[in-house]
Length: 267
Image (tube, rainbow, N blue to C red; front, top):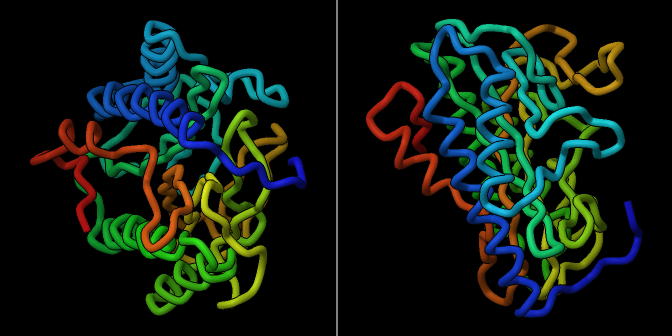
């Protein structure tokens, strides 16, 4: 990860928004297929084909050797799971993380879905993780600090007894998929790098139902909870502005697909 924070011009922000529109629609295409019996590698194929057909590139495929367009993380996998021949089952929880490169700029977002009916306890985890994302975004304004974002997320989810993963963080986004600053989902108010208008960051709460401890699998990528309890992950690419942050990615297309279905995660 580069150490310099690159401020984006309004022209560059527009290019990121174009990338983010393709990303949001790719997410929605995947959401249409999430149901029991679907192999997760089929979801990856849907996303990659949509992105390529719309003149983009999957940001993740080939990144440090990552093999696919999507990170697909099931149940106790927090992030960086591989698509596979696994067939989705009723009661699963599936996190879809995707990035798109278009016009030389990346966008990055993630959404976690219930597969069919899940327990009220796990659904609450999904809803509260999504709410934590928006609480973090509220802090992404000129003059605030990175620690204000982490504090907003941490203080909200820990009141429910959830774990905040420490080993993985949000990040800057731009010409590179991962740029400075790092954006932890925990922290203290008034600490960390000061946020400046024009900074683009991915804010991405990774929250566990049980303990926050995680372990990396032998594949070098997959991160799962040590207590094997479920996790949730929601992410937006966000522009720091004066007064109010601007969300560059979108869940609009996902929520048009999931409205009035068991996939819907409303807060």
